[in-house]
Image 1 (cartoon, helix red, strand yellow):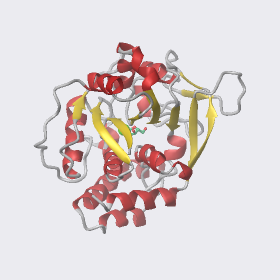
Image 2: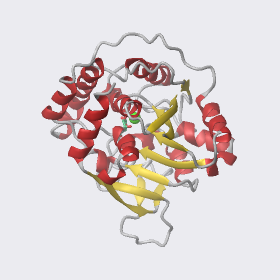
Image 3: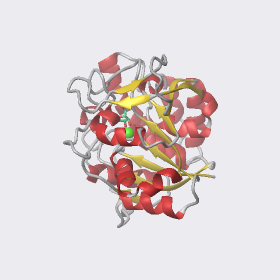
Length: 310
Ligand code: BDR
Ligand code: CA
């Protein structure tokens, strides 16, 4: 199985992404590392535990990481995810405990102990933990197989400011470090996640699984939907973060372009913008595969199939 670390700020869509990974035998989840993002760190780390318990995978180590961006004040997204980050269903407090080690130490230790080029990083939130690990231990950068992340936007532009996507906007300095690191990078921006929309039929398929996981995912997506429906008048909610895991499982569902992507870190107006050279107007080398399209039916079939196994 392909070894992955999921770096996350759950978030209903993060929760679904984690469940998709745990329901997929092709992937071995070495650990979950929580970061501050959608809600503050105490909640994102607690939510990561809740998701492991829901999947009955209390063997997965969960680590708390950075509680604030590298240099900026934390911006959160309760307006999308609710006060807990996982608003929707009633959730029990987790019994499972966080690991003692800091998430950044876990990331560093894992890359130093596993064979070079065997572990993939899957960031689903702001890139603070990953950038901190790269800064503290530059020797691990060359050992990373690939980074497959949810973040950024190009044609779809921003969801937190007119120019920027939330994960990149919250810690643009961290994003800059990660995008410049030279690690093979796959980016799942809003351009693709806004095509992976829930619909009545798709949410009903979760609900009619007849399992606790199915019910939770249906209630989470119901809650999560209300924001996009009210705000954008779209049919359903974009399942942003599960796109990362689906890409690992079935890359043939996705298409994109290898382009140069740079992160804006200074402009007040466009802070956190992912400036993707889509039309190749510079001669800057490509540093990322920037995904633009997904077979949404194929994506939801895969997601439903895998959740059903939990
Ligand atoms: C991203 O921001 C968060 O609100 C979601 O969990 C997702 O990772 C989408 O912009
Ligand atoms: Ca997220």
